[in-house]
Image 1 (cartoon, rainbow, N blue to C red):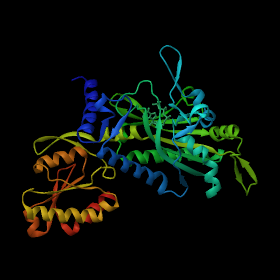
Image 2: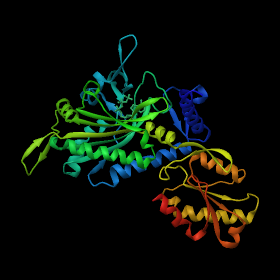
Image 3: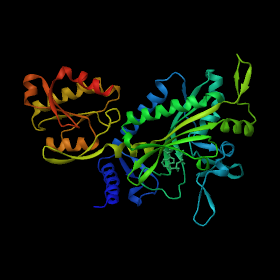
Image 4: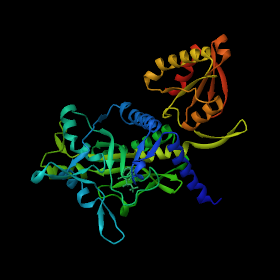
Length: 415
Ligand code: ATP
């Protein structure tokens, strides 16, 4: 097989696993699909939830200088005029006319109706709330405002599964600094992005920094690093880090007529803060996570497919099985173990699943394909000795663990 075919093959395999196992479905599939739109099934949703929670921990909760916001998706025209999107957010068309990739809509009825847009990035809702956060919380500089949420881009050619979609989700921070501090902040977020790539389970050997040259940077940026990933269809942008200067706040100040400067009372000066922005696309993150995790190997002489997801993001953390479904005493004991794990781990957000479908081999195959780090089997010995078999997804190694020790065994890995 040619190298390229092998690579496309990997993408096809991931797409097919996502569909088969309930991660991602084509949107409006029964009507032939809808290019650039995807729906997330139960495991996709769980993966999404875990990835977001991890991002939130690393970028927001574990820091003391962050605030958060959830701004409206439908955005007033003036906001996107000030940001340059109404005039400039366009892609070239083959026949030479340019096409604005924002989705427009109309708000209100009749003569009162006003053109508005589905936001093309989460950043602008942060800038328009800058003054609100300052007035409510009086933060010291530097500080950041984070937002996770949907954004919409009417891409001319959506493609490559979750890579280029029309309805996407972003995880963004706008970090406000004094102008002279921007390089220090830029380096700090650069390190944080690498830390994130490692934590979320993206293969860091496949991630490369690209210093974006002057001619290719967005209109607002004085320095941008693209973090590129070796996707099967080529090396492409996964996420970005940009120094946006004071471009956005300054333009919003001019357009709105509202003073958006920062007052330094000690120095008795006023200035518009500058901004460093780590901007991550959620859909590309999921795709890179899945491509990094997808593995085909052989275990006990059998070929298997396994998603080697980082335990922190795996949709199911532990699956509990009774060895045989038709032995009430085994089912009863297994339910006790399941309830024990649920009442201690599930409640803290670690999904524990019950699986008694098919034989043990089939259950392992299913759990491997969805990336469950551990399977717990309750067998006849469990009834006598009070222990269970814990099987490790990656090595296939099985160990006997006493039921009372299970919680500690798993907490070590998940926390
Ligand atoms: P590209 O050059 O690939 O179109 P971009 O430079 O326009 O991307 P940004 O505006 O910097 O992207 O958006 C920040 C992040 O949002 C990107 O790094 C990417 O992860 C994600 N993103 C942007 N557009 C899309 C899209 N159409 N589908 C999926 N993710 C996207």
